[in-house]
Image (spheres, rainbow, N blue to C red):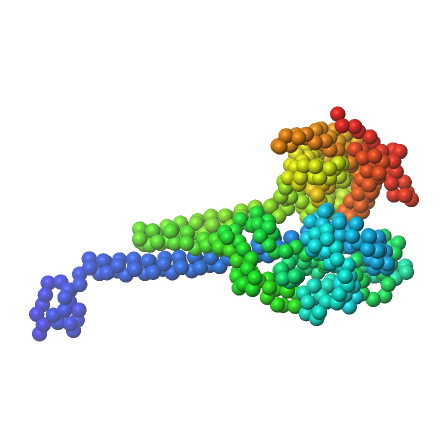
Length: 501
């Protein structure tokens, strides 16, 4: 018989060490702390991996959105030239080299900065290729599998899906600028050894004065190289670490041609919030293993703050995508969205649109350089912002083109006063940082809704027509769309003349 011992002894284990209640509590505490530590480590591992995965997905998605915005801007720039009776007449119906060189390509480069442009006729025949303002009219056939041909074919498919029959032939259904993706083809292409961001759309009539013949239309392709300047432009909105584009790379975002061939990839240093999570988890494991609820609460709060940071970063990037980098004003995309929203609320809140174009601005660039031109644009933007104030929104939609959405009022007397203030403010001399003083002016075209249209595009078109009438009448004036002659589309005798003070 086993000898009795002071304390507890397990049955059938004679001679085994005693295990008192305090030891059992300690053992239980050790087991509980160990399980708690393992649980917290597991939670930290899962949370850090999940946070890193979500952050990576969002960062790639933001880059895709910014690239898509750049393609949409290219397409919106194309729209004014590609959807125009004059382009159909002198490119599709009768190819006029002087029009292509002096008006078409010149506008694409000087007004919109499209570095490469092409006109591709039926059957994939290149009618014109241009680098900046240098035009090559040598016709050539694109080879099967050429990236430009693939994008042009996709644009043809979009055109035929929206083609309509009009008097004398064919046209294309009109779409607002905000939905230009319905008729434009977006993609990437390798051109002359460079990977480029490209958009393409058919050249179609707008007013129906001319019509497309049977068959395929001519396709306008615009492209911008994915070079260091473009990458820097993209990263001005994203602020990614070491964002770069590599040819034939296999990075975070792979770029493929329209037919699926890999052209290169964007790569950047990922922001990994998981590492920050470990700085919270490890101290919690060491110091608060016995306080599971407290540790979980701290971790939850941290994850919440991390999510807020990611959401704030995404919101900031969305705001940057809607701002003009040079002037700080609303860009074309932002203004188009605001104008469409105003048109939707027209029944309850009528408004007015002012189209603005600087006078004598080209002389500033020619005499003092583009840096001086940029400085003038910034000064004009600030003067417009101060003059318009809370009465509306100011946007920059082109090189020296501005637009104003006036929502505070739309009656002619107050619009006239606002126009006079704008002309007087902009016409004041501007002293450049380099010393010289320059003198510019501004011409205005005003349209009110619903008198001059009930949708965004017609209202903007009327404002543009009024602007053309203002410039034709001598510049430095404000012209109301309601004063346009019914047939000629512009008048001069009733324009409001305001001389700079």
